[in-house]
Length: 87
Length: 547
Image 1: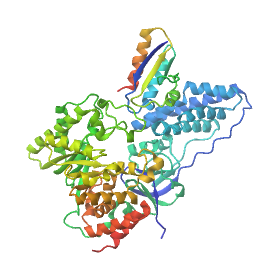
Image 2: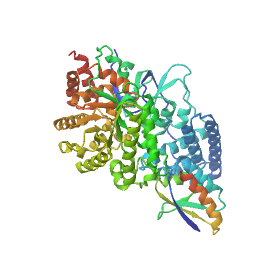
Image 3: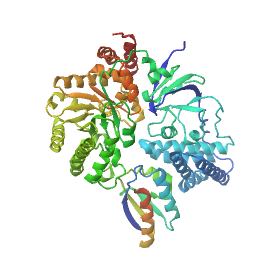
């Protein structure tokens, strides 16, 4: 399991277009991706409904966990995910 | 003659329209929870088909949607409908013996319960989830989910709330919208704004509207006027009054962009030049030279006369990336406006210098402007002193502050010698005075600028300022309502600054009244017991006043 953090900088927060793109990338990943606010339970990142329930606003930090030991593969997905929630 | 009644809500748009009410058929009630008689496999299968069908519908509607905002809403809904977690949960409920419709409601209910109470943009998404459940159940029960509109005529659509699927079906016969629910950021508001359909949302009295009734939608006044005439909304009722040579007080314009500045006609200067819009898309702090260029452009495009530039009014609700403001539990009560100057002193110092430099260079081209500065969100005399000192050190002769926080209204006399003018932002002042969040539609009625308590406070601010020789203008929403502008004159306000689209109407009415007529209107409005009576009293006073 590899865990990384990033800060949301898109104005709308994690819903609407950013959440759609985020879940689509997680869905396509070859391993399970989970996400949540640091210290709180993580949810499946391939579910736009679950992402919505995080109520994650602009300026908040997200923890993203990748169920793999492949640092390179995790990084690749992480970069793509970050691009959807940052401007 | 049918009696005229007024319903209050939150206006979207500025243009008023008059048309016939057409009630949008309310969603049929969802079926009661029931256990399956067909077995889990059949139920899951039915729902899977329904979801596939709904996805196809979304694909077609997304393709047909001309508007980007609407398309994104539909794309988000489509993604929710095909959510794998939702499918898993529905399957679990079916396996517990529920039928497809019940399992769907139970599963979505879990997501809804996690969102309820969230408020704002996240809370408003509950409507998306309701819509998906409704569409799927409609399809499974074999009923059509399309609402049919007449092909000719003009109608004001009235509904409890509207979904994006509803609004996409709107044709040219829909000229106005009234909803009981929704807020300033709800889908209905977003779609109506982008399609230019005047609307009043969060209209709690919408149940009173019946098919065939003629109504005026007056978004500027946030009102639905049953049996109203357009004139009562657009202000032409005063056209018979003789026009005087000049308005009774100075009428300025609010400007937030170069485009705004260019379309201001007839205004005697700019009473509020907002600077935050220029920086919304800046990732890094603009250099002083970049700022100078921005201000030069807007000053050159705008009208002659006195130009009041407001320093950056940012906060966690109006975020500017380079200021690095964190998220706050209560942004309206947090680090915003002038309070940000303490956390980003370099930017604010640069801004004052850049405004002065731009003002000097535009003046050197021969344009007749006098530029002054004011600070937003000032709570104490000490904050006013700090800002005034900084602005005068840069070379500004006239310095002012915004009056938005009730605390500062109690110490106006102590501002003598500190500032030269005050500018009242009625929107924020109302928010703090009435303890009513500006972004919460549930308390919108308290924020009506005709609230007698607000009018009384404005009068005491004007009286206290006059005693110490400080000029006081109003640049909030209140100044864009022509009749209310008359009342402001009567309360002792010495200038108003209206939105560009309202300048002409405000200027026109203020050129047809004198101070004593305005005083009478103000006295009547201030002693009313509610906003509706206050407005009616002001109008009655003007109509019966013949100098």
